[in-house]
Length: 283
Image (cartoon, rainbow, N blue to C red; front, side, top):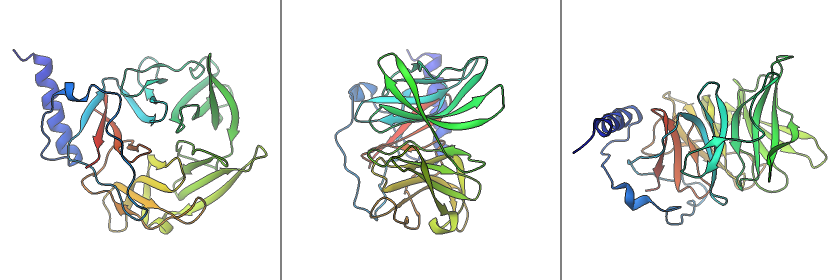
């Protein structure tokens, strides 16, 4: 006999379907997906936006936002809500626990985490409860938890940052109310700011926490309003790190997904809603 809680979940998914334009969703036996990962994908050629199905799957039953993943280490990180809110990490597609080394105290708060592509580094916003100053910092995973590595020099009034890229030099995408900023490590402990105006990408504004740079620095996924209006998920790419990005193009069948995060192989887009983490698989 179907339980009352099961009925609530089905009704919630129907509401989510209407909100995110994911029509024709069908129920699928969860046992079919009790495996570590999907069949391997590769991203489409540069210049082509990936396509995703109109199905979405609930994967983590926790009230968390900003879910970022490492498919190479099968780890995930998010900002979870409670009393108080906290940064959490753990195995991909599994319940998350408070991230050791990134928990706030009477003097410091941590928020807006983004996990690196191999799960060994992360960036987070650090807030001083003493001076009221906010900064973005890089952390490294150790056997005993996360350890501070260095501060990332970002432009004034930064509204959010992406996961760091792989390799040397490391790149982090930051955004303000005027455009995107590619922050590049210079190898000597400093950072170089390469601005990308919204007009360069063909958008008029971008969502505060919805822009991601792929681990190789070539692909950009962002939640933004393109010329012509209507905030939605968009895609751009470029031939090499440091080159200008192409004009954005829509990711078909996906509209607005809160805190959307595309995996390195373009195989899934994770997003958060209804106090849970969901993903949309590749078409």
